[in-house]
Amino acid sequence: MHADPEAVTAASPTLSIDDDGVGWLVFDDPQRSVNVLDEPTMRCLAGCLDEAAERAAAGELSALVIRSAKSGFIAGADIEAIRGIEDPAAGEDGARMGQAVFQKLADLPVPTIAAVHGLCVGGGVELSLACRHRVASDDASTAFMLPEVQLGILPAWGGTTRLPRLVGLQASLDMLLTGRRVNASKARRTGLVDEVLPAPILERLAGDFARERVRGTPVRRVKRSLLTRLLDGTPPGRAVVLRTARKRVLEQTGGHYPAPLRILDVLRRGLGRPVAASLELEARALGELIVTPVSKN
Image (tube, rainbow, N blue to C red):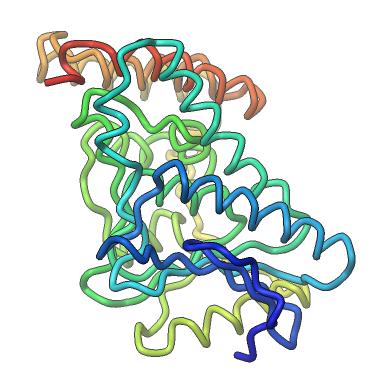
């Protein structure tokens, strides 16, 4: 890959464009051993995405690949910043800020691909969900996690909204309500990723994948059973799934943990509505949850 010398100058991420017009947005936090989506990183990301939009409009950018130069993809948001929020309005504002940055990514008029190697956690998963495509390395370390429920909150940078729209309600509940790790092969089976690629040549194959999308080559989608389509894709089916999940949560928690119930509430009220309406539900829910004793403890 021959990088464009006109790269966006910033600590992390950086943007460069190769000779084929494929953009490379690379996370490599110089201050940490892992990539964290703290406020400076999010500001830098927003600037890179604005630059990408300008380059796409000028015909200089045909696709965008997002990757990490570290052994993991992204370790999530800044936990200390989350812990420091004491005001529900500040929690909502933080959610809306992240949502707005990721919406810039979702709105780019070119194919966008997250090339995930290693752990992809929290906000990293939400970043990948704002892309049109995701590919993952076949390395044993590669996994996707949404651990927010274990922190007494919910994924509020688009995760609670975009995940069920991508993989279906049932598969998304397993991640949203448990924080469980999902390895690359399971991510492929659920439709979270489009391809699992050999780790040593992930970058090269991600570039090939991007060029195929530019040419209009379709992606092979996961086929779901008729029962899954009925339960995930119809209002009566979703009502059954959510009712069953709520009953299970209450049995396991006795109602003492508000986050799982708020996640179910956002899904119940947000699915079937426009993405923007669901994102607003996410932001409000985060504001409420982030100041609770459960979250602070």
